Amino acid sequence: MTITRDDRLGSALRLLIGVILLGGALGILNSTMVAVGIRDLAEDFEASLGTVGWVSTGFLLAVTVTIPVTGWAGEAFGGRRMWLAGLGVFLAGSLGCGLAWDVESLIAFRVLQGIGAGILDPLVLTLLARAAGPRRAGRVMGLMAAVLSLGPVLGPVLGGVILQGLGWRWMFLLCVPLGALAVLLAVRVMPADPPAERRARLDILGVALLGPGFAGLLLVLSQAANGADLHSSPVLVPLVAGVLLLAGYLVHALRGEAPLVDVRLFARRGFAASVTVMALTGLAMFASLIVLPLYFQQAGGHGALAAGLLVAPLGVGAAVAAPLAGRVSDRVGSRNLALAGGLVAALSAVLFTTFDAGTGDAAVVLAGLALGTGLGFVGPPAMGAVYRTLPGPLVPQGSSVLYMLNQLGGSIGVAVVALILATTTGPVAGLHAVYWFVAGTMVVLLAAAARLPGRGDR
Image 1 (cartoon, rainbow, N blue to C red):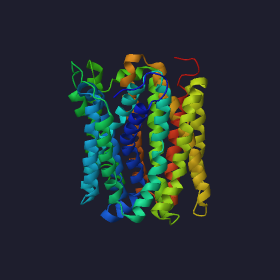
Image 2: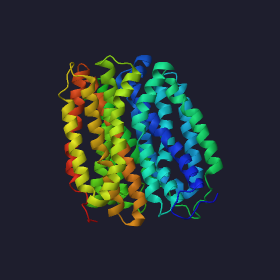
Image 3: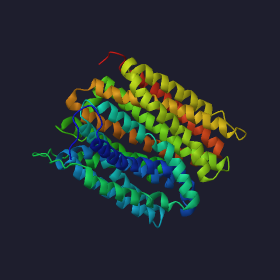
């Protein structure tokens, strides 16, 4: 396939971009669709919100753990091979989810889906950058941000339509024909790339320590949400195991030559601030995507479709703000823009805590729009700071860690929401508690954002 070398996006390049974005959008769209179906899943499987929350938490955790492995595998086996492998795993997981016979099997297949998404997500950036070249990278990345940020907009609405007309299984089965189309197009359009002649060594010990360590800590929140005594073995065993595994990884990463995630990057002030901001942004966004549909369904008496439509402005705010923030941050620096967005998000979260049973849907929707807009002005400046502050050879590792912690923040947000809703009485009390937690998160985010580089800083 021949791609034009000038600054224009030729037809071959536009087709390749479309094929890559189709595959990359599958995981984002599916994860936001599922957020609207949490209540239906809990009722159908007669399971608690803490258990059903693992339908989202397991997916996000699998994405988190797979991302750094994908960085190694893409270089070792080639981007095209890994892209097709990711689509195949995601398709298998989607089909399994649609045919799940109990909540445990659904969670297991969601983890498989998450592994597929964890392969695809980081490759989107790599493949687009490689295809576009440096002179067209800005326009192509802007297009990527605009398309992929539509997930939180379209996902809840599409999820509501499917739940109301077809049932929850079709939230997953719909991905099968779309994924098959993505595979066929990728085979036809995506150019082959040879794998590396010398394969870097995979940090197997790092994989064995990091993933189970994160899972252990998240399992603590899930067990607490299910009513387990905080001093009981279902809570203490995964807590101790998680802490020991992550501590073991820290020691391993500091001693190893090529760790899965190089923790020494966190010694760089700008990088540490960026990944902290992105993790907390993911936490706030996914917490909102879980709690708001439940609030509209339980407190407002709305169906799944109406709840999806009412949640969509949260994504609209982020989708509109993110591309604008990316352009503006080049002129004003990352720090001030992220601080402004974080402040708007914090005030919006506090506003949610004032709503009661008599508050109209319009006020809640506007607060969601403001929250999404604020978060949209935070993410791109934080991402841009990584590329401005890290030396070129460290950018791939930095990008992997940045995206990984954003997804980990999302999985923590889902687990915390499940815990809060299980320990509060009524949807309004649950909404208040969740958004006090989000407001506190935004305070920490503001402290981290103050350490981002300003205009002209490196």
